[in-house]
Image 1 (cartoon, protein in one colour):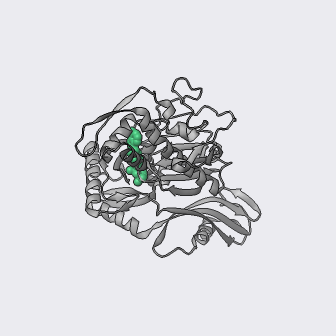
Image 2 (image 1 turned 90 degrees about the horizontal axis):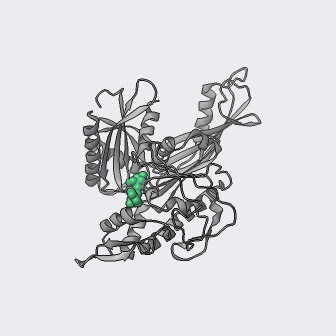
Image 3 (image 1 turned 120 degrees about the vertical axis):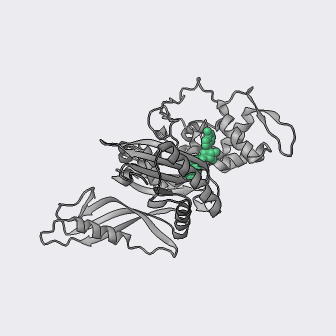
Length: 424
Ligand SMILES: Nc1ncnc2c1ncn2[C@@H]1O[C@H](COP(=O)(O)OP(=O)(O)OP(=O)(O)O)[C@@H](O)[C@H]1O
Ligand SMILES: [Mg+2]
C-alpha cells in the first residue's frame, strides 16, 4: 500500500457483505476514514469460504472501491475473522517469580501467559488471541498490571480465542488472490468491541451482540476485560428466509421487503399499513398488511434474544451486565429489535411508537452503528414454546428507558477502530 505509514486498511469478509475501510492516521491522535468499499458477499458463508473464486471477486470489488475512494493503492489489510468456528475459553497460568528480590518483570508476565496458553487443542485448531484478564500475585487477586510488584507466585487469567486453521487459511488465500497481503488477523468480536464499546461499559459489565447475516456473535466484558465469547447460529438472513417462506416471495425480494418495511415488533405497526409483495412464478404482485410481516419477524427476533440470553446465563454473567447489552451488526438495524431485546412486555401487547413510555431515544453521534440497552433484563426471557420457541414473559419490574444510540453513518466503523488498534 502506498504511504504505508499513513494509511491502514481493515477488511471484513462477512456473510452478507465484504467491507474494506481505509483509515488515514492523523498527525495528532486518531484516524480519519478516507475510503470505504462495500461489495455483496459471495462464496462466503458464516465466515467460511464455500466458493473461492466468488469470494475473491467480492473481495476485489470491495478493495477496488475503497482504493478509488481513498485514492491510494491497497497492498495489505487487517483481516477480521468470524464464524461459528471461532471459539473462546478461559485459562489460567501459574509461575514462580524468577528474580532474586521477587520483583515481577515483563518476562515473568510473559512466562505466566505462555503457561496459560499451554493447552492442548484439537487437531486443526489454532490460537488466534490470548487476552489477559487479571493477575494474582501470591494471594492478592484482581491485579491489572503486576510488573514491579513483589511476590513469589504469579498467576494470570486469560481468555483464549481459537479458530479453525483451514478456515483462516482459506480466507487469507482469497485475500491474497485478490492481490493484497494480510498484515494481521483479528477476530471480529474483538474488532467490533474495540470500535463500539466504551471503556466504562467494559469496566461495568456489558455484552456486545453483533447480529450479522449468518450468525450473532456475543462478547462479554467485565472489569475492563473480555471474559466470554460465543456465536449463536441465528442471524439476519434467517429473518429474510422466514419472510421468503411466509410470504411466498423470492429471497432477494424478501430481503428488500425486510429492509424497507420490516419491523420486529408487530405492536409498532399500524393495522391499516400495507406493502406490495412480489409473487413467485411470474404471478402478479400482491398488496398485504405490513402487520403480517412483523408477525413473521417477531418470533425470530424473540428466538434470537432468547438464545443470546441463554448464552449469557449459561456463561454465568446474567447478574454482571451493569451496562446492559449493546447491539450492533446489520441485523440490529431492523426496526423493533431494541424493543424486543428489552422485552418488557408480552409480545402480543400492542405498542405504538409515540405512545409508549419506553419510546427509544434515537441519536447519531458515534461512527459505528450501535444500539445501547443499558438494562437488559434477560431473565424476562423464558422458554414457553410457540413458534420460534421463545416468548417474552411479562415482569412487573420498572423497565428503565432504553437509551438508544443508533448511528446511520459508516456501517462497519468497527474496522476503522481495528485499524487504529493494529497500528498502536
Ligand atoms: N436496513 C436493514 N434492515 C434490516 N436488516 C438489515 C438492514 N441492513 C442490513 N440488514 C441485515 O443485516 C444482515 C447483515 O449484517 P452484517 O452486514 O453485519 O453481516 P455480515 O458481517 O456480512 O455477516 P456475518 O457477520 O454473519 O458474517 C443481513 O441479514 C441483512 O439482511
Ligand atoms: Mg459481521
